[in-house]
Length: 165
Image (cartoon, rainbow, N blue to C red; front, top):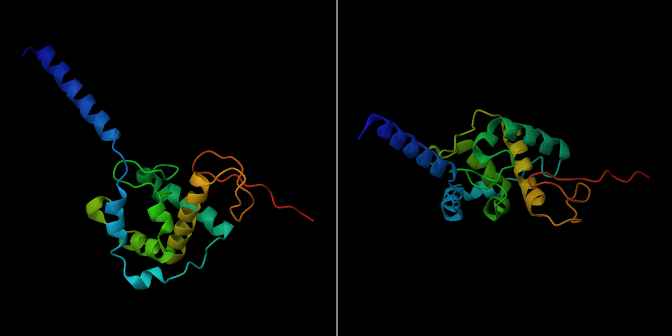
């Protein structure tokens, strides 16, 4: 092979490999379900002290952007090996199970342990994760508990201001 042909072949190979790597789909539910299933049953019984609190959700959103968005995407839809966090599996998981998984991670699958973050921060992330269901799956006009969900881009909740009387 001539040298220019070799370079053209190598560049083409790199482009094809890079394109296929970037097009990876998020992990499938069975794999993730098996990982969440490793949590002890006692974890599922733990209730979030921040459930439904707007201040905790906002703090969790900021923490998500800082610690999670690089792998899960800015809106949590998943990319590469990272799953879609608005999926039914994640949304149906008990908050305590999600806390357990954040603490322990799964390095084999690319999920780091966030055990160095204080529980308060982990619960805030869990609170935010639970809103992704509302933001990504809600129909227009459906009440989210924080005002009514009108129309918003995926991953965002549009809220109407509270009625003042």
